[in-house]
Amino acid sequence: MLLKSRLHWHDTLYVTKNTRYPSRMSSSNGNKTWRFLSNHTQVLLCLQRDPDVRYRDIAEMVGITERAAQRIVADLIESGYVESERIGRRNRYRVNPDIAMRHPAQRGHEIGELLRLLRRDADSSSSSD
Image (cartoon, rainbow, N blue to C red; front, side, top):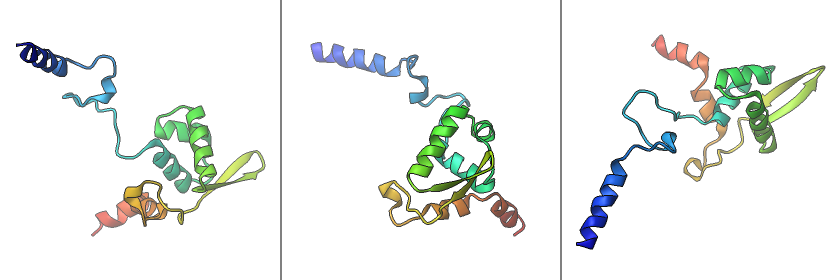
């Protein structure tokens, strides 16, 4: 009887709404908080599309703070995906497409493959077919 009551309590707990960490559970409404591409990938795409982009613009396009954009760009530079060159008061970025992706599931693939797949001009050429 004790086991049955524990199972019943567990089932009740399982179906209750997650109010403490709402982004950790899937919800039935249309306000999903997860995305297919990480913020690092989004920032890398911004740098590829506009090598002279400012942190403010990156933050606005990705939906993060300027400070988060700075941290992500620093991560990308530190890991070799991006190089930065100071030109006057601005930075110019160059994406290195030959660096391997970091996750073991993408072993053997370079970041350039993903970037080519997600290029904006690729969208217009595929829609004309």
